[in-house]
Amino acid sequence: MHFISQELENYIEQHSEKEPQLLAALDKETYQKVLLPRMLSGHFQGRVLSMLSKLIRPANILEIGTYTGYSALCLCEGMQENGILHTIDIKEELVDFQRKYFDKSIWGNQIVQHLGEAINIIPTLDLKFDLVFIDADKENYINYFELIVPKMNKGGIILSDNVLWSGKVIEPLQPNDLSTKVIMEYNQLLKNDPRVETVLLPIRDGLTVSRIV
Image (tube, rainbow, N blue to C red):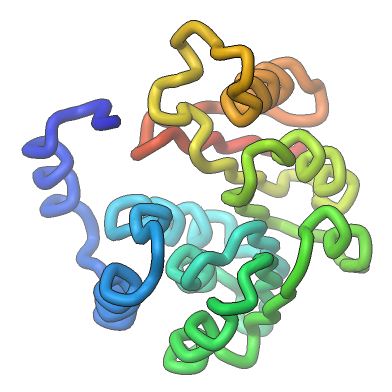
């Protein structure tokens, strides 16, 4: 679902920072070789993630949902010199693809890949995070949030992707649509939870910025 016209989307990209060459190559190979390439963050959202990371200057980043590694590399652009990004995904077949592009970047040694269920992996990470990006299975967004909040530094930022869910959040809820149901509950949780202050941005499929208070 396009919330604005394709012409306006093109104008926005043309008047935002240029996509780095490595990410353009990653984007192209994803579309050539990987299923569901629309899951990629892409040029504009990638530049938003990069800008937010540069403003936050995180030491420790957690990403839930790696896919082919595009968003991870964007988030690394603002990471502190000795920072670490931990990224979690369940797709074993994408691990080598991710690593190829991670190692082509200057942050290869600072990106730690975790393979498996994020619900099981997050509790094992004995770290405090400055920045978290949630972009995985929607049914677990609330579970991820509850696991993450105790691991956040005060003032840390949680970014949540796909929170407009192709506009389904304002349509009549279908009885068997668990993903939409959870996204709607998650959005309400972020609005009402006193542990965070939240703004929902109409970027692509919806990106929420939540700050730990």
